[in-house]
Image (cartoon, rainbow, N blue to C red; front, side, top):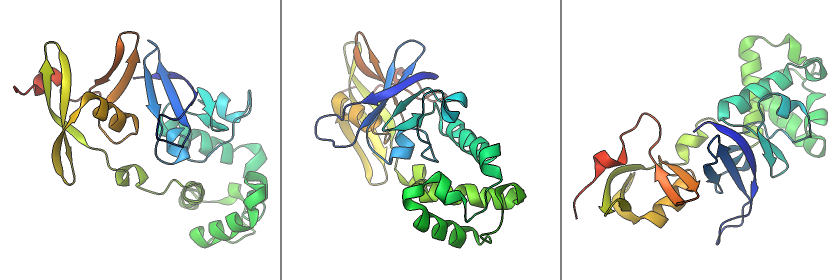
Length: 226
């Protein structure tokens, strides 16, 4: 799915966190309602939303939870890098940066960045080598809650078989670290919507259903007889 628009949605029943709704060109919807806020918005740097602001000019497709929503993690990361290299930020030193980026939390932010990167507080962003800049960028993402390998640790499970009743899929055999089990369609949809199942949730006029991820087997090839 190529997402072209995003907005904030209400949490599903039983969940407290705000959701983010992604729409593709056909109006199909993918909803993220679990996981860290940065992941729900594909925004590793937690860039704040401003109408016509930097994030929206660099790939943003909407806003939610007071943040810019990007169509993919990579677009969000590219926007963060572009922001750090912009005229406003590249002249800042490691000591000055936190007071501009996150004023309410500048003391903790400064201490964390200096410790994590090993850089001197006098170093300007524009003076950093490629390797130093990458370390700086990763430290920002980590401070914002997006640690290296976060998505891998947020376990995604796989669909290895399906059962059908007529032309409709009614159950999914889901494979995880602890083995496999059959889930109802409703259970599988919730798991996929939370980002924990390798499948795409589609909310269409005819109802909600799952679609295989791109370049994976079609569900019709995974049908198992009851």
